[in-house]
Length: 215
Image (tube, rainbow, N blue to C red; front, side):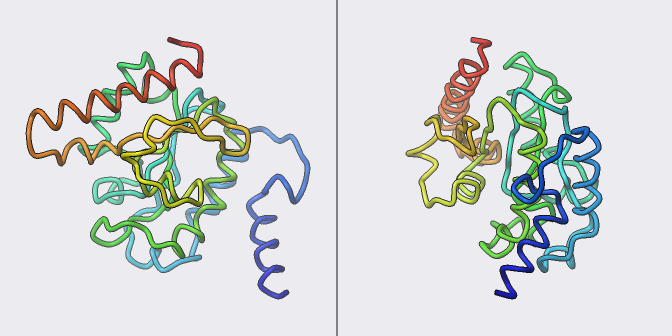
């Protein structure tokens, strides 16, 4: 019972919708969540990170991109997807007819896991309430999960990204499509494999555009 009380207190602290009903300014709410993230000590990742990386972008975006966690460059600057993988994501976003500032980018965990390892289940569980509250506030038209970890942590599943990429899921009434993480494409060993992965990711993004009504 004590554990349940603590969980409910945390969700109330971050303003979770099922705890109280209100219609605040979305920008104000995001800033409130960001302030909580910037002082979070709910898991051990805060001890090794340089900067918290809450996420950034437009309020009420057409698309919310979700990765697994910040990398080294993101940790250094406190901004999501600004390293090599982020530059590739920017090109994908532009090809979709958007600018980076038109969408929102966030991660499952808001602190860099040491060595860029995959977040643990405990780390993801500690941080997911922040992302879920961000989704409630932002109300994106489509969520795009970048990679297996983001997909499985958000859907509470154990899917293979190779099998599920491009498929349509539902997250609290919002369409969700998983696709490759840009770093997967960057780590392909041949030009042929790189081209194939890029094309498959672009196929997935065309499905996203169809859901939004832009294709």
